[in-house]
Length: 165
Image (cartoon, rainbow, N blue to C red; front, side, top):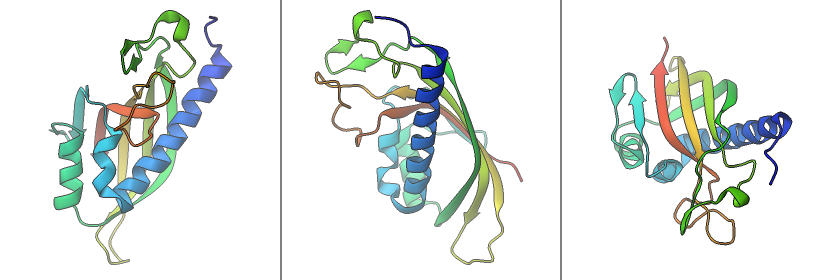
């Protein structure tokens, strides 16, 4: 199998970043009970304003039980491939080299925008910056996303959120 070229990697990573950002921030606003499904079980680091959070379930708990309703307005996003040969998991182990595809990569995604915490329309906007490392979700024997991940093709391995202002 041939290695994907730069154009293919750019398209795959850009499409993945855009799809992920749309789904993730929509869930933060209106489906907080699904937030943990965005995280890899092998999450390495999650930081919110310099505070370590234990994992996807802990992030979900913060948003469900501690955060007021929040509106996010993404102003920009960017991405780049970190690892072109990420060892993608399957239901039975790790993919062999002959099974690899252009989606077997890890991606750095940076997002910035505005967040409003609370319901009133006159709540001030806060600027935020967020960085993610996304990895491909494990696949089943048919090449589809493994059950239990909500059909998400990319999962958060690492995340750093920071309110800027």
